[in-house]
Length: 109
Image (cartoon, rainbow, N blue to C red):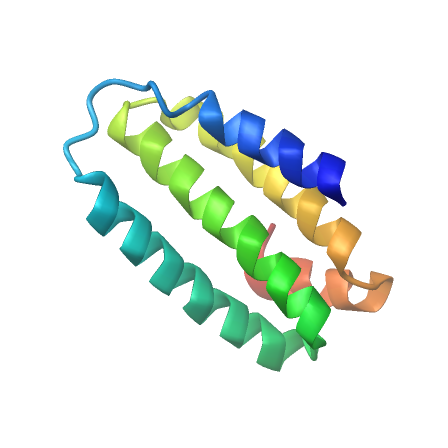
């Protein structure tokens, strides 16, 4: 778990130096967290997540949202599909097989 989290942090850190972001970091971080919380709550309801799963999904979702926003700000939208695949892979590690099947059909990842 710690290795996965470290890899995600390093992956996101590689985008920290992307130039061209016109959104202040504090408001971007806050809105990413709010959006991730909303998505997680919806997933918790749709997929019957337990608390541990909910916490892990929230962290993965915050990272995903921030990464996608930075890619869009840097006009590197061609990298978004690979980011989505990483996110889906992380979610698959968190969910049961049945939950992951419902996740894919409901959210399209």
